[in-house]
Image (cartoon, rainbow, N blue to C red; front, side, top):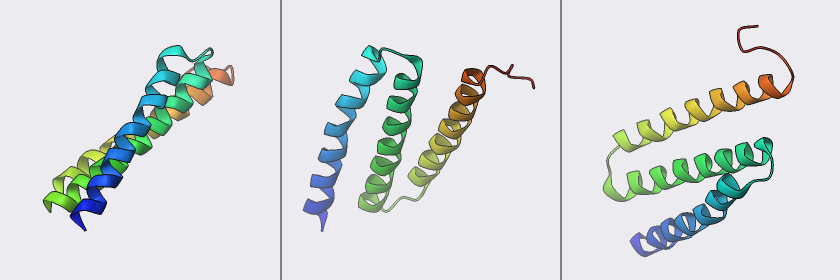
Length: 88
């Protein structure tokens, strides 16, 4: 079981590289935001795998906080791209 979790962890870490490329080199702001969202999903998966491996539940709290911040960022970008002010 541990070796399978290690393989999954390495795969998710490897998948972070294309996301970082899209965040840095993305031609438009929405492309970069999609990269950030996918990167956030991978980070939450990494937190989940590490939490199962180490049997520490506080790592899941880090993942939950990351998801909440990512959701707020996505809503903010959607509102900005919709042409509305952030205080509306």
